[in-house]
Image 1 (tube, rainbow, N blue to C red):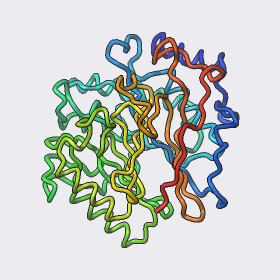
Image 2: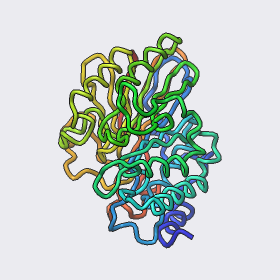
Image 3: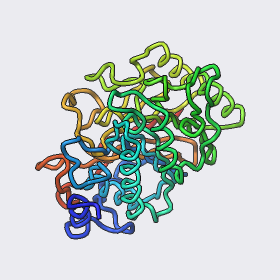
Length: 359
């Protein structure tokens, strides 16, 4: 149904070593890093940027990196502790089109891949977050019809939306963002999902709404706060303007809201790399998990601390004692190219980075 690349991905998974949800596709060493004396409470996953380059979309209506997406879905479903939520932080599809019929086809085909995967039946909730490729046109400008298309196709997985900022207001929004940028609670954690390219405000987030939302969450007793958006506030060092820092005053106001509210971290994608940093020492972390399957940045500098050249996903675990740990799981890029076969026997998924973000 989805062409040769779709069939190849599932043949690879079924024949060459992908396992079912009860048998991890990563080796036992993946859980070798102890999290500490307390028991894990709950976990969530963040990943972004799985779309392929335009030249590599032939026969694939989803425009996704089929092999890497299938591996990721199976790996997450096979984690020793099932995460509660998977945030897919944008650029699921190639998009970048003013043809909303085409955009809808890509999004629906991506949904079909997810719904056929073991992850969809595992009890892990999918929360998709739009990226610039989903909401912008060929000129890289966000437009209202793309936002509507995203909401229509991905709507079944936007279960917590509706409380975000509406048009106008202190953030001068051109369109209703209440189902694109919104927040929700899970146990003692407050999550904020962000559309980082709203119509008329590309490369921005609604900073006034974010600050108010965080203050309200703290007043209501939230112990942990995490933000998830496609574009990072602080981009990977070798692409210095490729994030919200393009508009630094707005970015600084947004980051100040996170820091003042005691948020543990912002998770993002957009830069095709894994990277973590603490822009202001001792405060909020930023974790870029843009290594979901898109061709990696050509300027990845492995001498930069906590920078990784591999495909994978990030797992954050909130412990029963309130501590918070982050692990980056990864597998090497296939030698034959980024969309090539990646059997688990040759490309095992392992923990590549592990750190404490407790406040």
